[in-house]
Amino acid sequence: MATKTKSTAQPRIPLSRDRVLGAAVKLADDAGIESVTMRKLAGELGVEAMSLYYHVANKEELLDGMVDAIVGEIEEDCGGFAVPEGVNWKEALRKRILTARAVMLRHRWAPGVLETRTNMSASMVRYFDTLLGIMVEAGFSYGLGHNAMHALGSRALGFNQELFVPADQGQEDQNDEMLAQMADQLPYIVGMMQEIAHDDPDSMLGWCDDQTEFEFGLDLILDGLDRLMNKN
Amino acid sequence: MATKTKSTAQPRIPLSRDRVLGAAVKLADDAGIESVTMRKLAGELGVEAMSLYYHVANKEELLDGMVDAIVGEIEEDCGGFAVPEGVNWKEALRKRILTARAVMLRHRWAPGVLETRTNMSASMVRYFDTLLGIMVEAGFSYGLGHNAMHALGSRALGFNQELFVPADQGQEDQNDEMLAQMADQLPYIVGMMQEIAHDDPDSMLGWCDDQTEFEFGLDLILDGLDRLMNKN
DNA sequence: ACCTGAACACCGTTCAAGT
DNA sequence: ACCTGAACACCGTTCAAGT
Image (tube, rainbow over all chains, first blue to last red; front, side, top):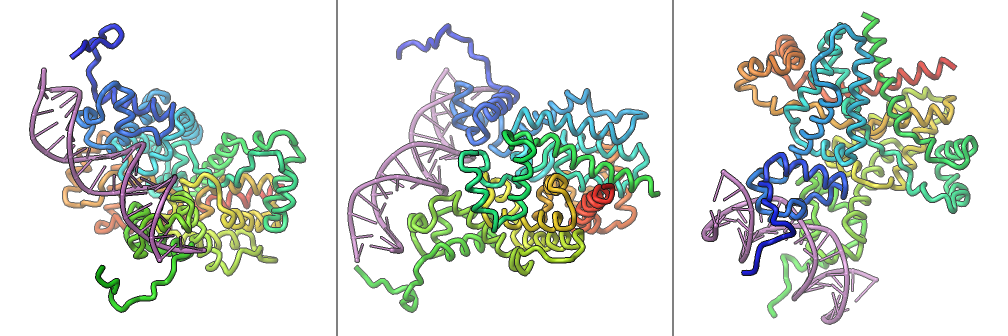
């Protein structure tokens, strides 16, 4: 009963796998990954939860698809995954990895989801294949290339889990008191933080610049590989 | 009505935070972290789900407590977290990190849970403090020590997320056909796998030895830090 | 002080049914 | 071919109540 008019009688675009995945990515970007439930995602698409199952087998496959979408963005931003010819391997790897990182920064939920995937998607394997290809074409043995991939770990995809976020250091209100309290338990961390505060009093933030830290670690590994390469 | 006898009228040990956490760790070890629900955990303790809330504020705090228990094991296996005197920093770090790794291998769910914690537990900060302490006492500046911690990332706790698990390579049934199929899409990975198969046909497993790979990456970083140290 | 029962607001998912 | 309603088996959590 009653009319079905919802504003200007939209013809209602039919759902599709791509629309579902696109909406899921957007929802995760805007509201966090914990908001990506079948019901809420359906709501976002103006549809019932059960309709999603027509386009996606289940939630795991939805998450797999979201990851694929992210790898697609990396591929696009890299201008394709073909192995470039006659380039410096270190620069080529570095460029790709920092491109991947830029994508991860746009989709902060992606690293967490990635870590829960049990087997790698086809597109991600292709990404890794080019990374390996860049090394092999530059003269890496397969063995060293393999070791290199493991050494890079998640850094190959542009992220590095930050475990080192000492509890609530954000609030600078009671900073000094707190530091004094912790000083005997955590002498070195407190020392580190004090030296920082000394160098740059009003921004603890700028000090722990993720990008700088990421590149430090990345270059440490790339330089280490370089040295192993030239040893042969 | 009826009697309450359950086997030999156990006096029933009262619950405690430690018993709850211990049971949670055991349940995760035995049945996987996805089995650690308030209801199942309560069941394991012969108690109603709601009883747990008397000893633990909510599920997040339960997970925090489980992480603390794991850090406790690391501390025990390290013989305490005190910064050792007059030792080689590289060996001291390496020993601690490999000890942490051994604990993680006993509790395979721990890395995943660790990554979901939003702020570090007190005991984990203490662990990191000694790592930093070992470096600082060996002459690292706080800045280099800080960089080193980030470069190590999760490796400091003995794990490194394995993203490089190309889909279902376990089944060796149709291995050759599959490799041929993938060869054009993934030339380098296939090349890598064939070289391996050639060297050691009947054990893909031995090749991707996590421990070896972990140590390769760890040493790459430690050696890189060593070089930066001696540059000053 | 410690534990529980009933209830609530969520999940993912199945299945038979609608158009 | 595509979408839905009702229902099921789970979650974490609250709250008032039992001993």
